[in-house]
Image (cartoon, rainbow, N blue to C red; front, side, top):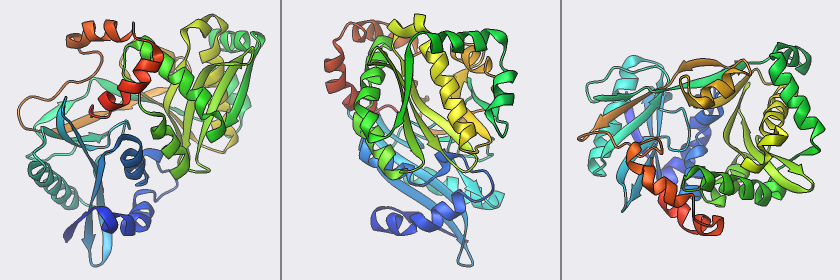
Length: 346
């Protein structure tokens, strides 16, 4: 068995066979699509790599990686940043072990602080000496048409959705045409949360590379966008990698109506699973997702560490003062300086 390191033109040539391997089966999570490496390259300026295990001329394993580097935070090798799930997939334990060994070696050559593999099932490997498992994935199995889904919701959820429908909110679906409105809502909400915002180019690249499989949902109130989300559809599984609602629209139940529309859209496309993303167990986001019927599953992020793991998450108490300061900045300012900051956070 050989392990091939793919980058540049060799990675571009390999994308079709890597896609066939990574997206095989009746269900394939959209985060497993190798095109994400190019979305992250174009949208965040990262350097993509892929490790491919080959045996007898056949792909038997695959590990996508992105090199994240910034003056502010350092250097990291991640599978994959921005996404909730990633890491190694392979036909055998030996192939997994060889791929991880090569990833650690690559991380050493790039002088990274750590190699981060966003697994759902832990992989045993001598070099993986750190784990972060404070969050869980929240996913919902879907029926074949919307009626049973609606009836499965608690009365409180249905009433909140109806409140949104009666509040004069209108729902709109599109792609590039809705990007400015979506980004206005998203960047404003990120500022309010005290979090640096991704560049609009990340979402533009997403829509371009997943054409026909990625779309935007925007809710308007009196003609003004107040809520928005990105949907990416895989084989049988749909995920919502980013979603935001303006705080001023909370009394309209805009977020509840938006998520009902996201779920309904997913069912209408014949998908069988809706991935709400990760959440801290028993936290507010966890409770929001659970009320729709989402069930938790493990999220086991594993690390090959050089020293202590970097905790660059906004829930780190170290950043409390910075978050308060960020929340006072004008939104246009956060759009100018936020992307340069957040791109360096793995």
